[in-house]
Length: 548
Image (cartoon, rainbow, N blue to C red; front, side, top):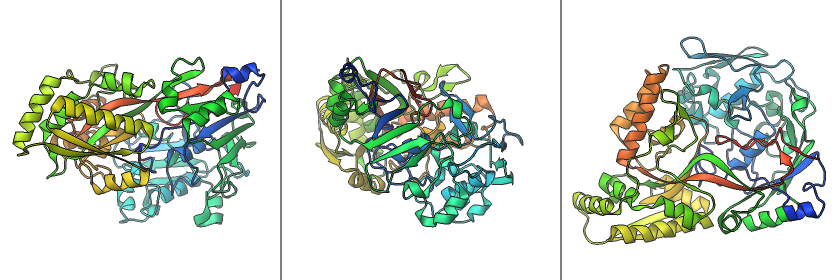
């Protein structure tokens, strides 16, 4: 998910779930929650809700809404483990790891009373994997039988390796074992759609809350397709009513962090995400919670031939010239932590070592100005660059990106010498245009994990991935990724060796320079309990409750 794209595609986008709350001041005023009620809460999103059709749109706001109103085969529990959702149990694959057979709960129903069927999953996935899909997420189905040919327009979506054996049995056939397949099933991209409702509304499906039904604990109401506030009301047909405590979740659009703080202080929000200067000033607030996310903010260096960063030593020099401790502590000052690997900390544990993957793969050397200067000098000679090197750094026009841009601009000039960095902080659409066109020397972006496996990070840097905007091409990296997803996919030891090889190659080649880990700053009503803040995936409020 990328930060500056509407797509989730592991796209990094605007910061994840932003929901909000009542401060201690509001508590003193006698308000136990934003609604002065123990059966509903008020939350926020920081970007517009554009669609509820997960086949034709993907951004964090929509996924946040779907996370709390829909349910897939699996869900995440409070320990961030895969747990049964619409599927009765977490299943083990057969056929040498290539076939999954899911038995659906017979009492799972849509909010309109329709049964949730295997065909609802099949039809939804066929819509989403199609080359006609507009979500940008059809690539996530890669590995399922025929998915690549379908998403490339070379085969009908009906040929996807997912079939309804009967009304409550779904069988999925893979082209090769995928060790992370179960983790992927929590993604909204794999959520079902009521096929009867999709057929009824056609292209207008999900364009407002009246044209969609939910199979999760809540259903969306009051969204016209353009308004800035809506509700999630309890789904009376949810299969596990005892797990749901709230009757209503009110959501509203709040783009400004200071406004979010003010609403929280007035008791008009129950969980507010704050950023930038607002977050910096509230790091010691008793209602502040830091939520660690498996996302990495990084500099993407354009490796394309003819660009300065086609030279490996110049890329290495940039990485060693950046003091990430200073950046996070003094520049951002919002709880962010230094990042030294592309794969985020907390994403996954290497089962062959028992260690956090990112921690075990941290380079031995992360900041060395003297070495950076020497590498820069050598790189300039190898690239036949003379005089001052002019570079353009592209980022978004938000406060955080601007602050990071200024820091990178200053620190490279100070630590490397003969370089001039021009910064272009642009609105999302313009920044995205430059990114996809390759019109940048380096840019700022974020990759927020879609599922808890390093493959999710590495895949977009493979040679032919459409999101490889940095034009990174390393034979050893590509070979490791190919082996990991084919011949070694079913061999745990070999698979994780490939993962370590891939990260080692990135540490060596530096096509991306990790800067800091994603941390959300939440102001939370102290009476609001049961929120499941997941490092990977969206925050889950479906089991939340307010203490009386």
